[in-house]
Structures are given as C-alpha cells and as structure tokens.
Amino acid sequence: MKNFVYILGILFTIIACSTSSKNTIAAADPQTKAAVNDTIRIANDSLEYEVIIIDNGFSFWLASTALPRNYYSLPYLENKNQIYVTEWNNRVLQPQRYNPNLYEMTIDYQPHIKYGYEVNYLIYNYMIYFQNTYKQRLGGYLPSR
Image (cartoon, rainbow, N blue to C red; front, side, top):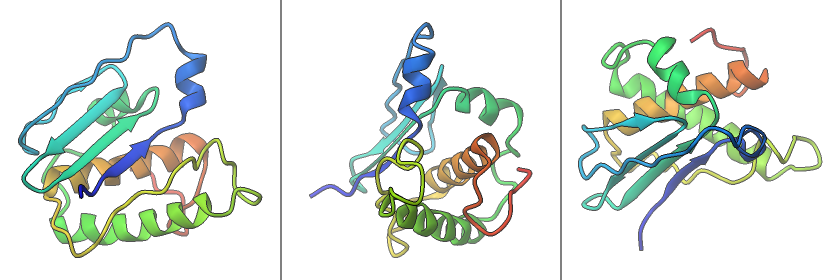
C-alpha cells in the first residue's frame, strides 16, 4: 500500500482564480522537481510516496521568496515538518474551531520514513508560505520565511 503525502492547498482559491491553467509535472526521481503554474507534484515509486501541492501563488513564492535549496539541513527540515504537520493534522480534526476551507485533509507525514531532502524542502516551504499567506501560526509564531 502506498503512503501518500498530500498537501492540497486551498481549493477555493483555485476555483476563484480559474482563469489560470493548472499543469502537473511528474518526476520519477525526487531530485528532479518541476513547478508549472500552481501545481507541484513529486512522485517516487521506489519509496511509494507522492506529494502534490496545489495552491494559487505557491510556485511563484517558492521561486521568488523561499530560501535556496541546501540552505537548511535535512534534520532541521524534518524537525520543522514534524511540528507543522502535527499541528496541521490537529486542525483538520477540529473543523468547528479551525476553518475547514483552510485545513481540508490530513497529511500522512511519518517521521520514521526518509523522504529525502526535496520532499522535506517543499513541505517546509509550503508550510511557511501557508502561514504567511493565511496568517496562521502552526509553530507558535508567524515565520518570515
């Protein structure tokens, strides 16, 4: 059974901005990632995971604002992702307290699985983008990057 790591961004922003086209790029190796418009997809059959990030504006933010690859160490990214994903999943389970349009589905991120640098880099940067764009605090403070 495949483990799927899904990050599906805010679908209502995609619907609201339906004038922009969405393309999906598949990569057999997590080291080769491509971003086209507002959908980023990374798949690796040998590790049996898939990451899909759909959020209007994330691709542009990643290219223009995010710190470059290899700026952070892999243990740093894994630690931050564990914190952010745990809080994200807690909010998904509390739709009466948190906006269910922001937190639509859980993320199956398991710390004992080695996803590699690229996956952790994209998840981390999406979490930073999400927190800054939607003024949410997943780790106790609103990060600048």
